[in-house]
Amino acid sequence: MTRSFPGKGIYLRSRSWLALQMAKGTAPFRRYDLSVFHHFAPPPSGGGHQFLRALIREWRNSGLRVEVNQISNTTRACLFNSYNFDPNRLRQLRHPGCRMVHRVDGPLSVYRGFDDGTDHAIARYNAEWADATVVQSAFSLRAHERMGLNFREPILIPNAADPAIFYPASRQAKKREWPQQKIRIISTSWSDNPNKGADVYEWLDQHLDFSRYDYTFAGRIGIKLRNILVVPPLPSPQLATLLRQHDLFLTASQHDPCSNAVIEALACGLPVIYRNSGGHPELVGEGGLGFDAPTQIPSMLETVVEHYDAIRAKLPAYDIRQIADAYYRVLFPN
Image (cartoon, rainbow, N blue to C red; front, side, top):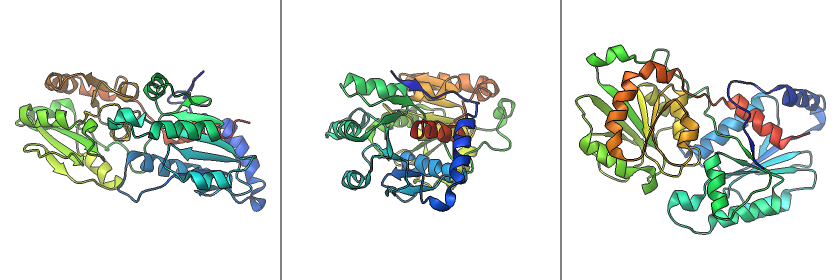
């Protein structure tokens, strides 16, 4: 049976906070409490790297001693990420007193559009080591189950953006101002995988009314666009600044289990128009609209513009403090 993330707007810190204070009492005798196994790429890099950096920073700010790609004798729990780690090193270093939690995304074969065996390798790691599993969306869990892949004690916890970087502008555009200025749309993607939606962006580049809209694409796309401004991948602080300079976020990606691009846009105060695919509907909720075909997008843009303030008031919040606490509960259940 799958347990779910406990919900938005409630800080569930009492249990973990008490455990942490007790741990602090033995601080001189401790080296580390928690290990994270993940191959980090230098920024700018993909959403998983950004989320795990924010998660580790939040834990360390709370007083937890976190090590990376190492398991000390005092380490009580280990979070290992998907397949992005050294399995031989993990196999050598793990010890019986260390609780093992596996963070899983994908299925990667659905997301990538081809099967190279990675999903089954992830399932083998899970069966071999995991005491519990964190999945990022109900979509991800169901898609794995349809492939016959089941995980140990799954619990659903979404991602969150770093609030020190991704936050709303002090003053966002209002609907009444738009007759005098263009509406600013932005899309972002670290990857140029075709499933990131190049077909939709190409259609928009040819059909959108650019006398009414300005459109920026930040990242990699793999096609030439004439009317949409394309800028290269940006480090998170610069990307967050760019997001705050826009009014709407649009994503055309398919099969994304828990899009960090969407989470970052929501954190910056942007309503989202999204492709009805993957975990997008779960993430956005009432904070935007979903399309099945690109021809629906122009009318959806007008709907969001018409109801802009009301939709912005319903944007979901994914707070890194609450997410870190939910992970803590899985890593330290007693």
